[in-house]
Amino acid sequence: MLLLPLLLVALIYAPGFWGYWLGDDLTNLHHYFRWAEEGRLWSDSYARFFQGISAEGSAYRPLSILSLSANYAVAGSHYAGWYASNYLVHLGNTLMVALLVLRLAAHQRMEGRVAAVLAALAFGLAPTLAEGVYWLSARADGWVTLLTLTALYGWIGPADAQRPRSWMPVWAALCLLLALSFKESAAVYPLQLALLALVWPGRLGPSRWVALALAFALLLLFFWWRAHLFGHAFWVYATPGAEQAPVDWLRRLGLAIGSIPSWWMALTQGALWLSLLYLLALLAAVILLLVAPGRQRVRWLALALFAASGGMVLATILNLGSFLAHGEGGRLSYGPIAWAAVGLGVLLLHPLQAQPRVPLRIAKVLTLAAVLAGGALLTLELAQVRRAQQGLAALVAALPTYVQQHPGYTLLLVPETDGQAVILRNGQGAVALPPLQAEGLLDRVLPTLPSDIEQRHLRLAGGMGTRFIEGRFQHLAGEEVARLYDPAEPRWPDRYACWSQRERRILALPAPDPADAAAWVAQLRAALPGCAIDSP
Image (tube, rainbow, N blue to C red; front, side, top):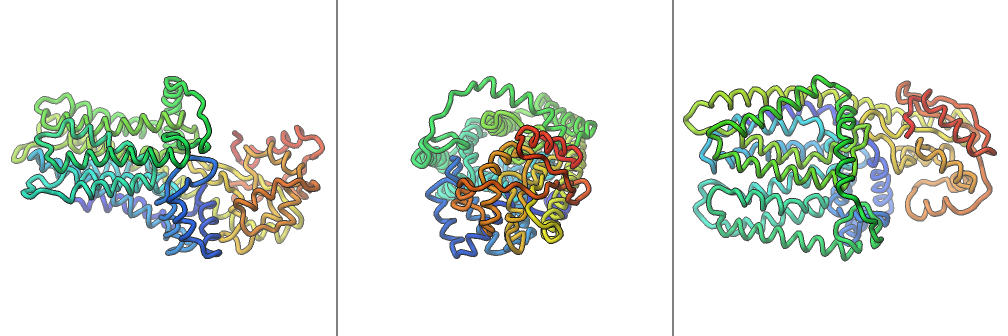
């Protein structure tokens, strides 16, 4: 029976092997290409164990970096080889959800096969977490979930274990240590485990108590290490050592909650009826099972798992402040949905050698309806993502031909998003650099996001265009970027153009007069709708 959810999830995500890089993936690919070219792929990866990802932030994720380095070493610049890692981790998490429900069913002396299948499908086909699979740079959420669920599986242990499990606390601690090295969101796990320990049916036993104590000890050690590296233990997107401004947490929470409806509608392509069926069917199934009589054996255990999921959600929205209106950010729901799916599976358990009662039967039908609606929403989402990926691939392929046919220097307006997919962001220049290009093209074309237009005028007036043309950059990081801001004689673009994702071609634009900065910016902004580029 467990093959069913694995097969369905594997099939629906299989077309992703023909996908393409998105957003931060392009920058990461360029960095790993450069590290490998200069013979420092592993040394630079090793260095990330003793520093943050960048000087501008306090993200400590050394195993995420190592994972991407290993992908480059194995697969080079072939997207399918990178995607395979995310794909297998997602299948692993789907399997772990099912195995956890089965193990908890064994401890409760209840039947759990159908519950495990439905829980695994509810997780594996959930539409929000797809970003954690197709976006390669977002793989940390999948790994954290896999490692913490594996630690939980070991903590629970077999229902009829006869011998002391002295190995288990060490195994669970190792899983947590690895998870913390992938992403700081794993810091919630000890609190989640404590919630489960509070409602555990029966004696915890020495090994579970030791594992719980080790989890909190590792958490304190992790916070100490972050404070040592960055000057503060908690902030992730803050400059290391910088003093943090006070935050109105209630207002932040209100803004985040208020942003969810528009975020959800963008993520699901505005499919209102499917969305309502998905959300209401899940909600109705959970409420029905919680209030149904005779569910005491599983109710508190499920509530603890839902609370563990809700704690992750709360930590996420307080950190974010709000959800982006175009639908990005679904990957952050990866862990919470996994824990909630296990909770749903626990609620769907029923006594051995007994027929399910009417409320349980209705709840199973509602859950199945939610799974089908979620799978339909996921299919729509992945189809839009593939269109976005194909459009970006077309842009990368079009650039060499364009620069051959159009002499001079071109400012090229490019979109940041296509639907809910971020196609270009911080390092948009990577579309014109190796390994995506045979040689660097930044001396011929300057990719520019709508949000960068004002800054582009200022930088070009300061000589950035001259630096690009003279530098003929094959790499763009660190010292190369710093050189771009050295004063030089201004060199304004000879041509202006935009990339149309809709038409998948580069469109020529009239050249604005750079003498008037406001008019220059306004003319380029006015051209965005004709290129089907959203302006922030």
